Length: 192
Ligand SMILES: Cc1cc2nc3c(=O)[nH]c(=O)nc-3n(C[C@H](O)[C@H](O)[C@H](O)COP(=O)(O)O)c2cc1C
Image (cartoon, rainbow, N blue to C red):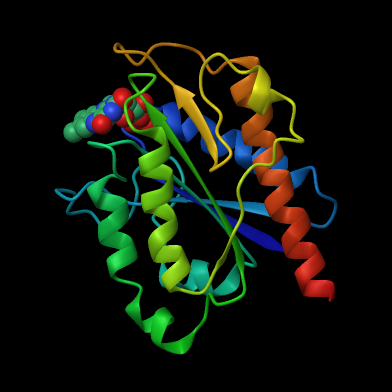
């Protein structure tokens, strides 16, 4: 069973988080992560020259669940990711994503720079698609322990104003836990 990890990243923070979410997915026996990204709005080449391929609607159709990652941009998701989601109305009409589990993650340069608003804004289109949006439960001890990122709305990373802070042990554990939780829920839904 494939779970889609779809992200946008310029500086690499969200990409590193996506890789950890994928690691968590693959810790669930029977689940595999499919990493995809989206191009910059100015990009003309339809094929990614490096890194994961650009996401296609078929990836959303084929995968049993979605982890969506974006840098925070003015307290909201980045435009290239929103642009991609705005092109999914065919799937919305068909109800392709209805009933599939989803989760969201983000990175910011300031600690109180809008992680939670971004995460909630990312949930909105997924709810319109009928996806089952998962957060991170407080039973995950790192949610209480973290002194940087990590929220009940989804994993997050405080990258610092120079975007150079490493992902902390708590942030890392929460990314992995989020991926694993998504995969475990998808597996349960598919076997129900
Ligand atoms: C246009 C723009 C808007 C941004 N808005 C915010 C913001 O509202 N709050 C914040 O803390 N960081 C903001 N940032 C910083 C990014 O969220 C942060 O650098 C993030 O870690 C980048 O992720 P990436 O390395 O995956 O690209 C903004 C950056 C840009 C370019």
